[in-house]
Image 1 (cartoon, one colour):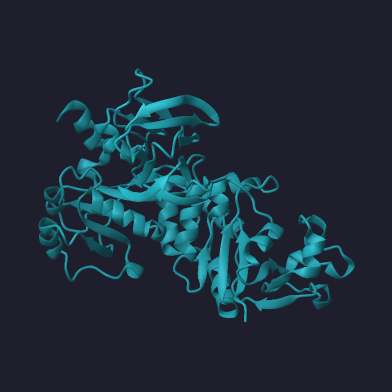
Image 2: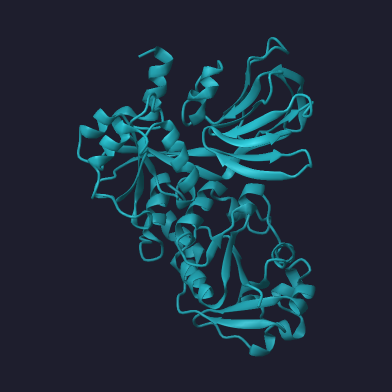
Length: 460
């Protein structure tokens, strides 16, 4: 019997407890619930009221822990609004697709006057051929004769609306009964739905918060530091933040594994530079978890790697991604920025893209100046550039797209890396800042990431 897949789309701006209740109810009826927050919609300007990276984080927080529920952020990442007939085509090879709709959308269906039939792209065709899970909201009566030919009714006991939540937030009214506690904390931290431009950092506290511990067990210093925290940590599902003990590599691994949990990362340095972590002496100077910290939401990279057959696979990176020569010969690379060929032939050992957070790592060692953590920019850097002789690096705006392509993949092959993890041999790297992926790093307020960069710049 094919797997049944419920497609639960919406703006979820923000997702409330009522949305979570709907997803949980659907999970009782279907094998998989695919939650798809929509991208920009011309008919719903409110979808652009909060940048997608924040909406993505809220969707993961609210739906991510529910059994049989998958949060699909593809609309955000591609900056599109995927129509239901396109979703039908995308998922029908995976199982039996059911479109989740409110009862208001089927009103008038018996006479061909429903919103689905009249306003959806290919709505008449879907009405006749597709499956619909119709949400019966409390207090809303509908005529069963209006149901589509292939429909199941879903009874709900929880009422709510994102418009009400946004209104309450804008007026400073309590929404604690309407939102997941972590979602509310996230909204308050960055001023969502209140300020016209959300923040990307905030001062706060981890006091009394529970943490999930990740320690680099191959590092003796990390084992010793983590021993002081043994017995005090909880499972990831019950944690308020993740405490990483190790070096920057350990932090990057933890981010790669857990960024979709949308938990803040508090690192304790047991490595060398430890730019992404807090120094042990600062952590030990006050009770743990610390009461005075700075949260920083930092962007990640969205990356696509292309092989010789033209196939692409995607990845996300926090610090950087690069192509480097795979043989003793120098790499010949073509650099295209926003679909404009900027460097027809870059002769070098390799080329790297880095976020502001990653600008202090390999990008800095290659000669680029480190960026402040909240700089709205990222970097493109060349390694041991021979031609053009004058070029070393470029500062990129947040909406820039970059393609780095090998000009001679057969005789001068290149290999790819993301945050130090090998992606194997490729012919091209496509990169931009992600519209959905971000990681929150937490620092003791006395020695925040901004202070670390100042120390680098002034040699302190």
